[in-house]
Length: 224
Image (tube, rainbow, N blue to C red; front, side, top):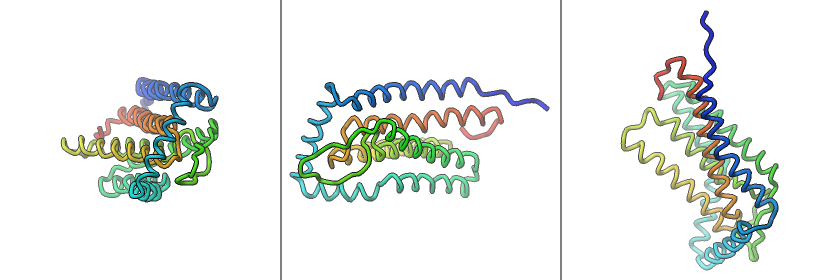
């Protein structure tokens, strides 16, 4: 019986992507955790300006709070998981669906682990717009949106037509940016928190997919 070869090229690409994004994010985490430097000063200035703008527009504040409740990380991951279930049941691709679901669960764990490792304090805002608990870096909302948007795009990619291959990633990117803006405008996260969350979330799903394709390609699966 012929032994399967280890997919080293794909695994190296996955590791390379993880390092290429993970190291800069780790450096950013170190800088903001130290609470000194121009990035930290800019973060604080941006939070004051953002929350002052939101406070001056009551309708915007109400919309942002509604968005915050509707797009909690739990609901985002659940939505992505339902897409995985649909791919399993309707497209009959259980392997691909399990990859997607496993990636989302791994993303959730990594986001929480990163928060515990960095333990950056939340922004302190006078006349706070919302009261968020826990730690600040990376933003769990931005992480969940980026990880789920990337995973769902890659999950559906083989079945998408030319127009959908533009629309789906565009919608995923727009939702991720909206999610990130919501956190800053409400004063729940610094800009660097959401940047770190977006980069790390997308990298987790992207690296996971490269590894997944490395394992499945030797089996000559028709999925792209």
